[in-house]
Image 1 (cartoon, rainbow, N blue to C red):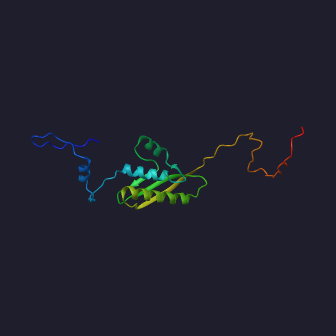
Image 2: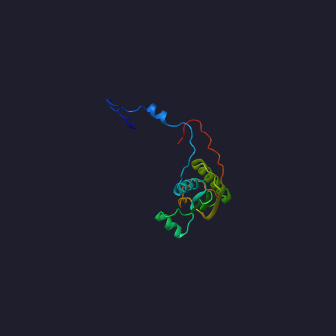
Image 3: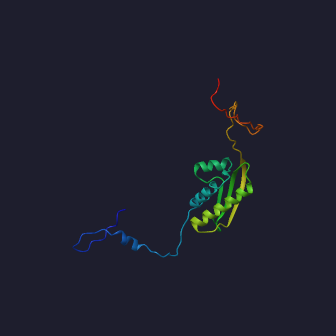
Length: 171
């Protein structure tokens, strides 16, 4: 970082300030005032907190919402109302097989915490709508499989280990 140049006194050259002087000029007490947070910043905070929650696979939106999101006009599946406090409406897709109510509770908690931590304000209302369940099957096992592979539907039998032989093999 380049230190600012101190104005020259008559008959002297300008000198640079030391970093100790810069630290001394920074106020150490908080000053009451205003801060402005854009709608886009709030939607980015909400989007990150939502997608980071376990069980959320994405935002649900219709074709018009997806087109508006691709053009950068709106964020699909996310609606913010800042007229009287912070009101958030989410349309989500959730992973199939997970309890939907628990995923919604997790999203609610994550969004409230993220807004409180980054902006310093409480969220007045959050509405979470689950638009779809997304099923993502895993990879199928190979058709032939290995002969020594145990499958879940196989009957497992214990075999006795071969007895140890003393001496050399006679073959």
